[in-house]
Length: 324
Image (cartoon, rainbow, N blue to C red; front, side, top):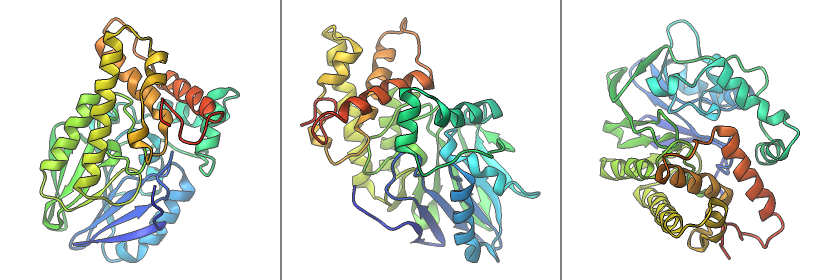
């Protein structure tokens, strides 16, 4: 992944992004859209410290345009755990209804507890997200939900929310600012790292990429990684369709899940970090192809990735899932 600077990035058209390099696990992006006398914040961070730093950096931009709306693009904690720091009277927190069902105290506790597990999953989480501390989180869910699409007026500017989940998660939403030709995608896009399909099917994630490619946008802020354009979207789509096709072929050949994961050659995507995500992505395809297969929960998905991550530590650099 190419290095890029931490902090605020002016996207033009009174839109801004706050980027956390290098876009790895937990290192999510947020955004700010300013209108006449008010602003909309896209997502918060995994812990209070990172959220507070972002809000302080944006404070010069929000002094005359206070945040009146927060949009959470989906239900993963690194995109909403900091909500409590902006949940003041007069602030709407908006998410899809499907995402809101998972944005609960129990869901927040389940994720935060991963840091304290004394097993392979705990070791993995602490290794890949050591700079975050999700303690002290008070689950602060949406105050407004929707399904399908929703147009918001932000100080006289149209901001369109479009539900594209189930894809990465059950309730993914993209945030489009038509007059600035800017788009915030949440975790439909990881730039510089492998995409991750928790919910799926994988084809839904590819379809979400197609929707983005059809929009009149020039500046795209992914959920993780540097600001990109449609070439970056196409690269993510290429990965998804490749992994899906390779997984289907192996399923039809009778390979086990573990054999399929180990045999898929990722060398053409060697520039992407987080190759352990191939485990969750192949699992997702196998679950779609075999409806009788019990759906893995988030802990089981983490377990598959943690095992692959640990195994990769004993191989040459980049040698995950068949990549040389």
